[in-house]
Length: 369
Image 1: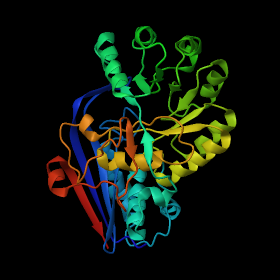
Image 2: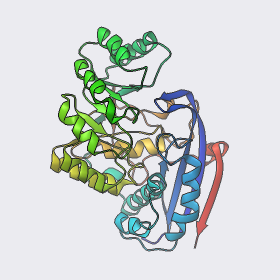
Image 3: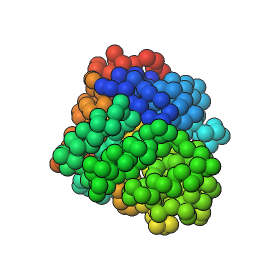
Image 4: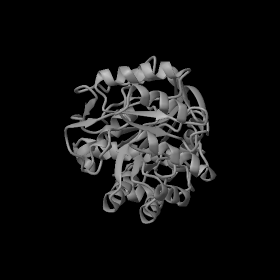
């Protein structure tokens, strides 16, 4: 498949309400949207590391420039038979997983279009519904959070994820558990705790959580493995998983019982498939996380959520719940309460509406033969 043209768009869109986590607050998102063209076929993708380098070392404007200046020039005019071949051409660029993932995922949707398949069919996912959960960031009060959780329970969600950080953890959970004693609940720490706080973290066991997601700093697998051996609550790696070898190491050390796979964060769909395979062989359950993408990126994650070994409700929500306005040619919609159905459309599951997207584009670049 010869790559004739790649278009890059840096897009910014305002959230309905600021997204608050352990690392701060974001009022808007900044994403890379990629169009890859071969002949008369095209594929679209989206990569969202957020506007500033707080979730990880990458950020929206940064991955746009890395893709424009270093990644795409290595791909234009190349005949790429597989995503692995694409990844090999980019291997000398260190890190920059979100930038690489944005370009790599466009290859997959382009390949699906050329083969007349849905993305799910191309990657070996099952057709049908996937279950999603609900999640809430840090709120102004426990009462506000409990009201939001109550709404999610009323809507039929079987699990709820809560952001946790110093000052918003033990007392917050005690308040929530006093109202929802049996709700399937887990917390996402976003790397906000340190290994020397192990004794403190062990107190989370009393809340009977489904898991604790990413308790320690990014890249720390050894200390997470030590903590897992001392806790009943399952641990989950999220930000730490950026490359396939890290999944292999985590599996060998028994560091956790879950992997949260975000395709852009791990460098794309091929690495997602490899990490999921490693996890399944090790008895580690997987689930798909989101990065507050538009429905372009969210629809891609739905296809990955339908892979084998996806055992926990996923973090995917329609963009209308996150953003004041949308700019796609279709909308991700619930097929039944708390469920999405995999795509029937071949190629890109949901693509941009270019006219609508114009007002959100901050920078763009076109590279051709």
